[in-house]
Image (cartoon, rainbow, N blue to C red; front, side, top):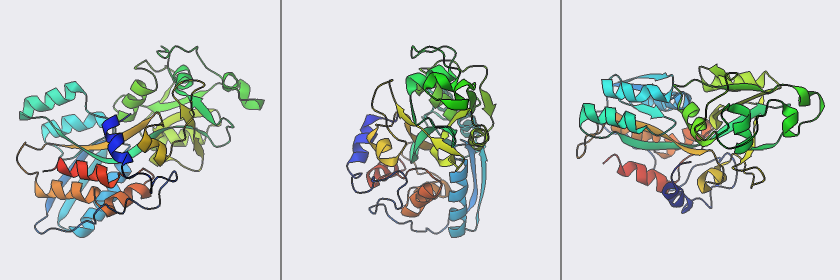
Amino acid sequence: MFKKSILTAALITVTAIAAHAAPTRVDAKIAKYKTESGVAGNLGSIGSDTLNNLMTYWAEGFKKKYPNVNIQIEGKGSSTAPPALIAGTSQLGPMSREMKSSEIEAFEKKYGYKPTKIGVALDSLAVFVNKDNPIKSLSLDEVDAIFSKTHKRGGADVTTWGQLGVTGKLASAPISLYGRNSASGTYGYFKEHAMGKGDFKNSVKEQPGSASVVEGVAHDVAGIGYSGIGYATSGVRALSLSDKKGGPVEAANYQNVLSGKYPLSRMLYIYVAKKPGQPLPKVVEEFLRYALSKEGQEIVVKDGYDPLTAKLVEQQLKALK
């Protein structure tokens, strides 16, 4: 879960705009984007698959404003972002998790300063089941029992849907597991927050991207998988979750992400190499300003994720100075 300090700031402006799961408009206090002169050149982005579609949408909108900008986007997993930033093969490092201390140290060894982290959207990391599966909710204790072979949260192994209270033909069906590979930030976040840093079962079908996870579950009535909420389709349902079995169950919606009640709430980031006291290259700075503008946050909603509040946007813009 992203930091409580961020959550507290977010709640200052949440009341009027957090009424439902997919807000139809962003915080009215977020400023519109204003184009600047002299923005041109090449811009590379390497990193998160979760953010891949969102980066593409932002790139399309940004290029309409700046036809002389050429943008290349690659989304193979958050773990590919730090090495690309360090090597200078990309200027933007989208990540669905925060950098590990080892990644920050490697960056600092190269540049002499730490990378700058910019929050660009909010996400409820969803646990998806097939639309025809009747189960409505799970606890993270049960999620751990389903996906993990080490059971760090203390539960007994769960292998069939009947063990979770499902009746009928599906009750005896083995649970079919879909997940991401270890390069994925979603994999790392899920491993840490849902499984107490435990180990995945060998039976998890590792997929190259979030869309593949959701597609697998959509075509497998006994399937279950995890992915950013932005990849939801009509073939799957996001389960409501509780932290502990018997605890309060919370839906994967905007209000619960902002309040921190949904247990797999997270911020999505773009990391950049910004030398302290010096501005970013113009094309990099303006891309980030565009993502944090009213138009940019409307694109967040279009892609199925949750927009930042004006207070959160203000905090991120300060990091660009």
